[in-house]
Amino acid sequence: MSVNPPIAMLAELTHRCPLSCPYCSNPVELTRRDAELDTATWADVFRQAADLGVLQLHLSGGEPVTRRDLVDLVVAAREAGLYTNLITSGIGLTEKRLKELDAAGLDHIQLSLQGTDAEMADRIGGYRGGFARKMDVARWIGEIGFPLTLNAVLHRQNLHQLPRAIEMAVEMGARRIEVATVQFHGWALLSRDALMPTRDQAREADAIVAEARARLKGTLVIDYVPADYHSDYPKRCMGGWGTTGLNVAPDGLVLPCHAAQTIPGLAFDRVQDRPLREIWYEGRAFNAYRGTDWMPEPCASCERKHIDFGGCRCQAMALVGDAAATDPTCIKSPHHAALQARADAFAAGEAAFTARAAAG
Ligand code: SF4
Ligand code: SF4
Picture 1 (cartoon, rainbow, N blue to C red):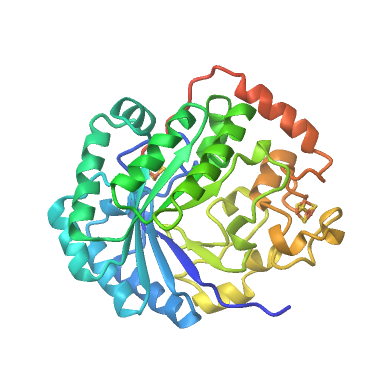
Picture 2 (spheres, rainbow, N blue to C red; picture 1 turned 90 degrees about the vertical axis):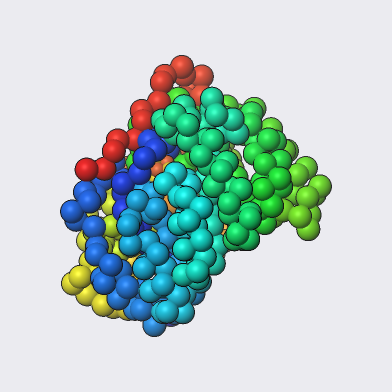
């Protein structure tokens, strides 16, 4: 099998974050501050990534702004020739720091939205006053002229705010909005009863996105991750395992996707121990589900196997206890009907959500 170089790398600089979103994609076992890679190691990882063929670097977390060396890290990434995107809640950014990041060469900002008003956003993010500060940050981003993507994670409690989230993206001058229905891994799995959208909400969101895409063509690009428990086919997770991107965790573990550590038995390499190039091409975890040879039926003989690569391995693990199984969100999975029934049952629940914990 021929393996292409990765296009994008997600650098999780830290798991520390002032917010506590219940759907956070960080692992439930958070990395402590004293285990985070230092500035020089990250800079070396960025050079190795560029040498490997990576073009886009997503600086993420946790909240990457909590890293005091963020400006230095942007400088290092730009020197390596990488396009840099900062993924942030905005909390902790000042106008002065944004100007420093601009001077350092930061190319793009992706701002997360927990809700479209203070009541919702501050409750979901667990941070009073966060929405007002985020609105200040959005204004400064516009004034400085950073290209902006708004990133709205939607679930049963805030899906009714989708039309306003799209309006806000236009008002902020964003070029793109990512409308992502919550994915149930890690923290979100603990709050499935509280966050699962209803089937009607999922269908309504499909219609709202379709209408907005037609109306705002040429003004705003809308990327959309639908509610997959209520869908017929799974998403093409990470563009295919080990196909286009890799993640580096705060402690240097190199992962095929952010939830890969939930799959027992996979061995992950660390950037401190092995060159990134070797990890990408030869690492056992990257080769475990790369391509299509590993697939069982019905995926092995399915005409969609090069479209979705059998869906999400972490989801198959979480839902049926087998990472090599067909993603049960697929209509061809023997577990699909039971999953849809469970999704309806979760969506009818009244449970409170579990806030993400703070990293030590
Ligand atoms: S999802 Fe929320 S808690 Fe998790 S890193 Fe992002 S802002 Fe922080
Ligand atoms: S059977 Fe497998 S390859 Fe076919 S659509 Fe379902 S998940 Fe995708």
